[in-house]
Every structure is written in structure tokens, then in C-alpha cells.
Image (cartoon, rainbow, N blue to C red; front, side):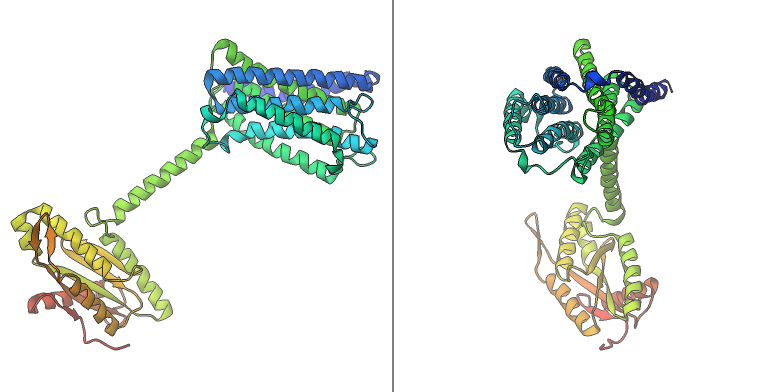
Length: 455
């Protein structure tokens, strides 16, 4: 309960404090309209961002946390991009532009892109989960990234014409600029929710500071959307952005100085892990419930369910199918004489031979003991005879088990839907009776329950 009160008070503080800042700024408007002040203020903010990047990288070397490294990379990008935002401040620019419109495009772009980059880095640990941390995250990556950021920024400053318009003539955001900011808000919003739930489960000062910083960046983006350049509200956004650095940097610095580790609990990630584990367990349970562990064929329960489904389907389409009931001839003698291990091997080989004698879409199951059943779909009596012949032929060759030779045959009883029955009990019972007629007569043969009807 204390944890929830603390975070709610903090979030309320974040919402209220900008109101006091606005009041403060509104009485000093002349100072904020000074281009030089913007130039040095943003340079200072960029230096703070680079300092936070350094603190984060130092913390990363201690913990090897991918999340901290990406925060370091995020603030490094902010430091470079935001510096160029300062360097092309109207009236103080170090670059020459053909007209004020192109300068404004680049000026606004650097500010917006710095926040988008930071938002992506704060969001991205879940995206980059499979990348090895030690091999791919190090100082060399930061150095190369800094060079690339600088080259990119110089290119944009020299060729701002490639950028789309981001401000209208009266200083409002264009559709492009709004979409740019909305994407930033989406990344930040999702990340804020993750840190919020993490803090509720595991209270941690660093996580709270990260959450506060993210919310401040979100406020920054929103305030920039509703403000116009050089106005009081526009300057409020600059302050909020700087406060976000201070908040996030303070949390990481606290961990660094106290030798603690950020206690981040990824509840959404954990839920995904639990769902995966449940799926695996369900698959295992389904296997135990529906698969015969000895032959790896479907078991009796699965067969009964499949037969019920097949009856329902065939009734709808006015189709016919056959149920084969099979019993191995001579299996009991082999099992009693040579032992259960040999008997188990015989059952495995028999299952493979029956399975290979029918189509892939047909159902072959172990019914129990040395009895097997099969649903042969979309078939008439003449075709059923051919399938029975293939099954019988598959047992013509002797079985070689551990160097010993065993001869085995199979007796098959066949019932046809709908001629011999229209429900489970009728079809199984009649195919079973037909099988016993074969057993009593000659074995190693097949028989229909009733005289075959050509369909």
C-alpha cells in the first residue's frame, strides 16, 4: 500500500509542478526571448545528457545490463542531436542556410529526433532480447554511434531541404510533425506502463526515477505540440526535457554510488514466459491424454473423439468411411515366451507397418493391448479391401528384433459408415465382431461385418 501511495504522489507531483514553472516563466518572458539564452541553455542541456550517458555506461560496466547500455546510447544520441539543435539556433547559427524556412526545419527536426531516439532506446530492450550483450554492447559501439550521429547531424545541417515541412507559417506543427511526435509518445507510453507495473511489484528508486523521467519526456512532447517557438509554454517544454535527464540520471547515479542494481520486473515479459510455459505444459498434457507412449500412436481416447468428429462430418456431406479393427495373430505367445520387452518391440514395429499402409490423413490408433483401430476416410468397400490387403502384406516379412526373427500376422474386421452403423458404438462393435470372425476362421485375413456394398 505504501508503494502505491508513493508512486501516486510522485505522479501527481509531476503533473502539478509544470503549473508552477509556467507561472515562473510567465514573469520572465523577455529573458526567454533571447536567442543567445536558448543557445547556451540547450548546450548546457546537451552536456547534462552526455554526462547521464557516461554515468549509465559506467553502471552498465558494473551490471552488464542491456537496458542500462541502451539508456547510455540513448542519451549519447540526445547529446549530439540536441547540440546541433543549439548550434543552428536562429540568430546564433554556425551554419549558413538559404532561408529561414529551411533553418527552422532543421532546428525543429533536431529537437524532435532527439526525443524520438531516446524513446526508442528506452523501449528497445524487449526488441533486442536475442542479441548478446558482451559482444555487441561496449565502448566501441558508443564511439562509432557518436561519429555516426555527428556525421548525420552535419549532413542534415548542410542539406535541410531534404526534410519535410514541420511548421506552418504561423508556427503550428504540420501533420508530419504531429505524427513524428505521436510515434515518440507511443514508444514512451508503452515503456512508462512497463516501469509503472514494475515499480508496483518491486519498489525501486531507480525504476521510479526512470518512470518519472519518461513521463517528463512525454510532457515535453505534448507541450511542444501545443506551443509555438519562443513562447512561454515552448520554454516550459525545454525545462521539462532537462528535468527528465536529471531524474533518470539521478536514479542510475544512485545505483552506481550505492553499488545496487536496478530491480526491474518485466511483468509483461514474465506473463509471456508464463503463457509459453502453460502452452508447453498443455501440449505435454495433451500428449499424455491422447498419445500411446509405447507406439507413439494416438490412444483410445483420441480415436473415440476422432471417430465422433468423422461421423458428424460425414453426415453433413453424405460421405462414407471405414473403421478397421485389428488384432495381432500370435502376439500373446511371443509376449509370454520372450518377455514384455520383446512384446513391446513387436507392438512398435506393428504400429509402424499399419501406419505406413494407410494415407497420412487416416487415423491409426492403439486401442489397447495388441489391438489397433483405423479410420480410413472417403472410401468405399472396394477401396477398403485394397487397404486391408496392404496392411496384411505389410506383415509378410518377418520381424527382426535384436537378431531374433518373429513371424506375425494380423486379423482385420471392417465396418462401413453408414451401412453398418451411424454412431461410435455400432461401428466399433461391428468391426470388432468381424475381426473375431476372422480370428475364429483362419486368421491373417480381413472380413466386412456385412456383405460389402459397392458405393
